[in-house]
Image 1 (cartoon, rainbow, N blue to C red):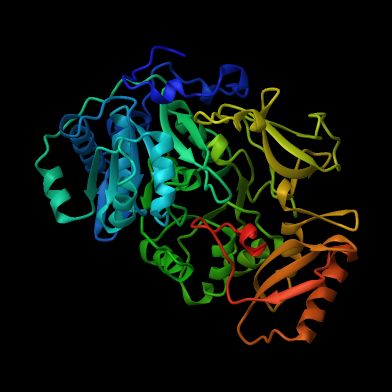
Image 2 (image 1 turned 180 degrees about the vertical axis):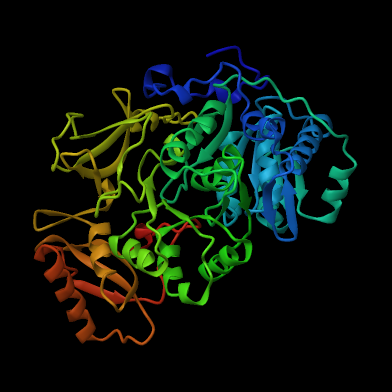
Length: 532
């Protein structure tokens, strides 16, 4: 590690032991970063220096900021954080807000001031916020005024949280307007921590994934450069929260890296998202498979001629969803998989390289292999667990689970795949979403994908439930499209559909019709909640 700019060494001192780190490799020319690097300088300040100051950067509700406008606001907030609130480099700042222009400013200002941003999802409650505040020992928080209630409840049990600055109201705007212009960025090292991204913690204590300034730039130099290929005239839009690394990259860092514009609107349901694409002339959409599936039926009512590229990640993209979206719009989706531990996408496909059924190939800068339980590589066609290494990798904040995720220098993600002879990866499931029935291994997403091809099915989730004869049987929870009735004849029709499309042992022996499925804020299906 080069000389740190961090005065507060809490994160540095709570990195996992060096021998438990994954191997970090920087092989391609664009991944050769300087020893001193500040992500905000690289993404924003240099854009202004390069002559992009008058180009649109962020578009929001009643907001249209140029790169110069954005830089001015970032400087004022960074100055306020350091001079008025006492932030010193290395301090953790909890960030709480929906996707709004000022929430983007908060991220960039914390980085520029040398702080460590701790993003939190808007729907988190006090108990979950308390867990994160305690683990990160955050002394400051920047919070949208509309989300104050749960943070104030959590604050009572978090003595380290000394100050909360609320934004999103006239008082904050006035405070920023009265703050002096200009701010000299902290001279951070490339490997100084920039953010702690906490996993959802849906089944236990959340894990804090530490990412450094170099990681922020590395994610911009992989998927956008080699797969998405955005340009300055692009306008991004989408749904993943900025607190989720998928959203942080796709809706803030990637647009700024490309000197493009991003539209930040809160609570974009599928009908509002597709309307906003039309209204704002968005060219790149970033969202979940669920949203694409729900927007498909709405396409005929909108003018989407501006839309050129679509990105899907966060959960498996069913073949039926991809095909339906392509038929409705003429656009083949850029599919990808990444993870909080590695910050963003490392396996992906674009329309030119897409192979039916495959997720894609490993992106330049990363190496991937499939392994068995003993970390032995498995050959093409054989299911194995994904092991990956590259310019980013897992470093949990003071967490013994580090040694479970990293083995022999590889990040072992818990995802099951097989490859073909040409190196394309075919997703099966999370290892914990594999159902063993009568000795057969069945992946939940595979069966869900087949069910979604039936004209009656709008959404579905498949789990394993105990069975005295087979160990487990497959149970499907199905949301029907309008006009269909969930009666026994439809149960049989769905079962027969799976039997005729996949191996017979993969059909759901139990089917339950429901009005909705439990999902996370980022659109991921919460199968554990279906298990009751």
